[in-house]
Length: 190
Image (cartoon, helix red, strand yellow):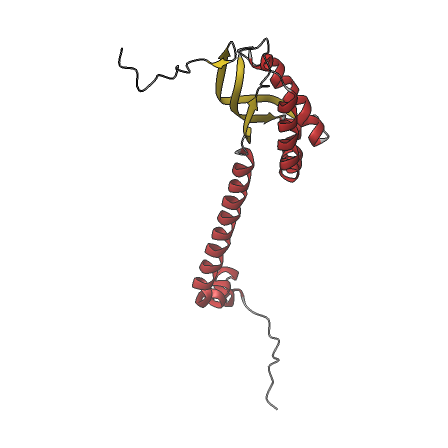
């Protein structure tokens, strides 16, 4: 009987040269998918870049929250009775700067209570007197606004009150300064 060879023959050292290496087997197996692998790597890179960009934009938009928030245009009208003050009317814009520690919480409250804050400022102006506008820095008026706004927001949030576009009309002995005397159109003497 002829001798049968077993299928589990021991390989000789020379036959290992014919066997492909792991690298060659991987390349052979995934070589056709080389473009697919490149596409996956590119897609992941683009997604990571997109996430970084979105995260960067969110942080940038949060840091560009305005430091000064406008509350509106307000007007003070003095009492018609004779006063010690020469201020008859004043109009101005009010802006506030929020404390950094509570900026986001204060801004959220301000958005929900904006009309209440404006109403409180108008009420304070109805109780004000012309002397409040005599100080060139308006320090006392700003302090009152700051205290009032903090009360309206139920938190210590305002670090500074800024008044812009201030226009003041003064009176001199009950008449507006700069008011001209009415001339008689029939007067030919002049």
